Length: 371
Ligand code: DGT
Ligand code: CA
Ligand code: CA
Image 1 (cartoon, rainbow, N blue to C red):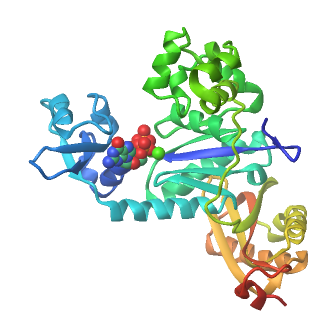
Image 2 (tube, rainbow, N blue to C red; image 1 turned 180 degrees about the vertical axis):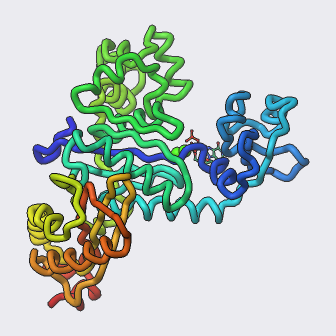
């Protein structure tokens, strides 16, 4: 299931909480505590159009995305609703900064929508034991670079990560370890599975299936007969947490990265480097294996209070050897530790980026960077 090339995968789903409405709260702190509703006004009259996003205060009055604005205003009743028009440019800028902050954690990211992304953390987290910590770091990185709160779900595949993310909202973090998948899904309403909307949910209910656990008891043949081969198979696999679609990154891999928890908190460059030798060696052999070289080297430091620091530089020529990386890291960590007084690192990482293809020339630009 979660094995790929014999390796257990660690997948995170990051989704910004009530995105458009939170974005508005961010730049108008005076809105705190009031019901904020971001609207797509159709222009026919003052209140025609639909709700795009509502903050939690508005949601507590039953206001939801997709609802007519008039209905939202009716539900908010006495409470003075704050109705704001969408400002796409502003949200797109926040979205871009969010994804940029998350890129440090993995070379394999699948952007699903303006506020949602899957990240393959298999390398970075190095297993489920470190997953909760990395999840907290993701949230922190987004918060620091944008001010936004998001929720993070982590599991052995995208489906589990997504469901965990939704369940942890708002400002949540939930890790579902592979051995807990079955127990996690069992008691959930089937409608919490992605792609199971009201319609499919209703048909399942007629069959006496309300919980995901009930769904696992239905004969797969019955599922394909009723829902067709593709949805039927999906329901069968999803109910067992075994729907394991790979991430489909929109772009080619852009970096290789790895992070380790130090044996003890440290401000000593050599002590930190010592513990990164193995990971660097490993990343260099991955580069060779994939016919790539890199020019960018990044140092990542995570302090005892979970702040993420990074420093980077570009090597003069494409590289796939350990020594130049270690030299670069030495100066980057020295710079980081001297820039921030009193900084002690709890975790340290390395990122190799600006990848170039070394053999099998693909394009003229790749060719021209060959040495
Ligand atoms: P969440 O994730 O439940 O805390 O709430 P949102 O508002 O972030 O909802 P999400 O993640 O489904 O969608 C992200 C943004 O996409 C949302 O802030 C506004 C936009 N959006 C979502 N649903 C609708 C819709 O039905 N109509 C319009 N116009 N925009 C929508
Ligand atoms: Ca969202
Ligand atoms: Ca979303």
